Amino acid sequence: MKRHLVARLSLAAALLTWGSVAVLPASAATMAYSTSVPIILQEVPSWDLAANTNGVCTSGATLVIKNAQGTFNTVNYATLAAACGLRVIWAFPDTLDYATGTIRPEAIPALVDKVKDLPNTWGYLSVKEPNWSHITAPEIRALYRAYKAADPVHKVITLFGDVPHFGTSANPYTAGMADVVMVDWYPVETSNGSNSTYLTGATRWFPIVRSKVAAVTPRVPIYLMVQTHKNLGPATHKKQRPTQAQLWREVRDGFTYLHASGIAFHVWRNNNYTLDQLRDPRMVASMGTLAAQLKAGTFR
Image (cartoon, rainbow, N blue to C red; front, side):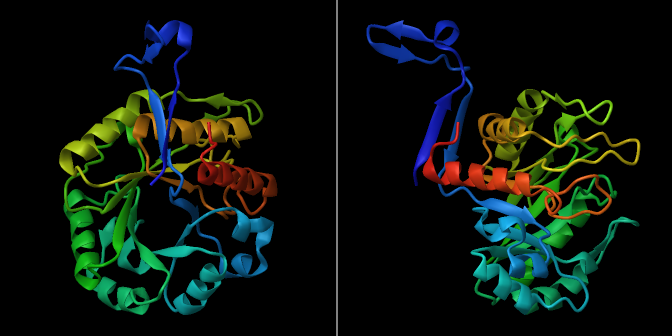
């Protein structure tokens, strides 16, 4: 598997030379990624896959997360996703209630049985940002056990928000929660709806997340979900649409400080947001450019 390392320190400030050999100090931050890194979309509807809306099928993505609730036609969706070159990470809202913070692991076997043998099923997303909905560590483990009992073959992802509290009692992480840990990171903010500030917390919080996962579950990879949206309401939200340079910086920070081995883009469509990927074809084009650079090994 081809990997790329990029030193992010200037020669004048960071290199110690001995003859013709340049030696980076042990503390140097480096960026590493695989040219086969998973690239993930979220919640692209069936009709947008069928219509290749905004070029979603040529965006370079390899996986798509899709809620499958009630009588949703999973076979049809899997067929459309396969035509776009996508494998599916299934999420089942019927297995938990975010409003009440309750889980229904008993619903998992029947839901998994509908998709586990589909040829482009990649795995399952068990829970999103559990600390916000007060889904507890034992409940996350119960969901994981139910998924693995129903399908021992495919992977289970858990998506954590609130990165500064990851691994604490407020946002716990233990063994038996996931085969892949995904964290979301939305650092581009605005104070007036038009200016833009990039929060610098990745350098502080990502190494803590990485160290916690490595200590508790050494072989579990970490994926990063990055910001592509704008959300100015309610008033507590102040997310600004990233520029292409800021999108690149998000991914670069993920590789450098989190050691992410997968990159996910934020949700395709959310009508509560000011702007999403469906209404922003330029963002989808930027995502495609970034994916192409990753696959070519030219991302910097």
